Amino acid sequence: SSVSAAPERERAPLPSPRLAARSATMGRMHSKGKGISKSAKPYRRTPPSWLKTTTAEVVEHICKFARKGLTPSQIGVVLRDSHGVAQVKNLTGSKILRILKKNGLAPQIPEDLYMLIKKAVSVRKHLERFRKDKDAKFRLILIESRIHRVTRYYKSVKALPPTFKYESATASALVA
Image 1 (tube, rainbow, N blue to C red):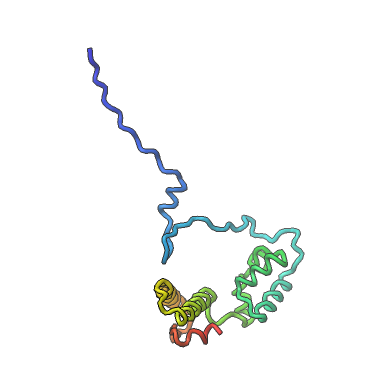
Image 2 (cartoon, rainbow, N blue to C red; image 1 turned 45 degrees about the vertical axis):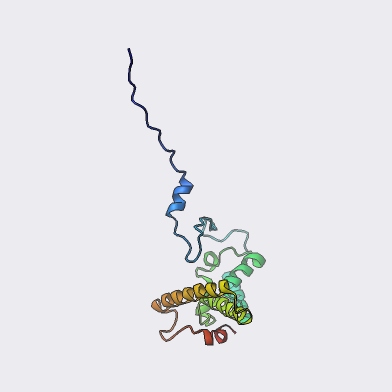
């Protein structure tokens, strides 16, 4: 006698959790990347027991570096690498930019916007020498669109005055 067995359907393997996370990750604004790697902050929010630096000394260092012309992220790197301060917020209770604002040393333009403007100025300078560089021209358009987007955000959170406007002609003066 012939017994007809119903053919079993093959199941597709389930995607790994890492791939599932990647599909939900938002992509970069102007590139294909959907990277998920990032740095991890220490779990404990208290300063380490071996750190003998006081809050007043750290604030003093931050103000000294800001007067030298370092950006808040550069100050954080110097404190981490040379002074053993992993997280300024854990030691002082406030972030580097807040300390700078309290002491009247905060930059007029937020750091990320400043770096974007600096990059646009350098690309524009490159384009003056190499007028046929179509890729640089395209990248400049992308950089400037990011500048306009970030500017709109900073105006909405009142970090920039409402009269601030990015203009390529005056941009080099902002960065100088």
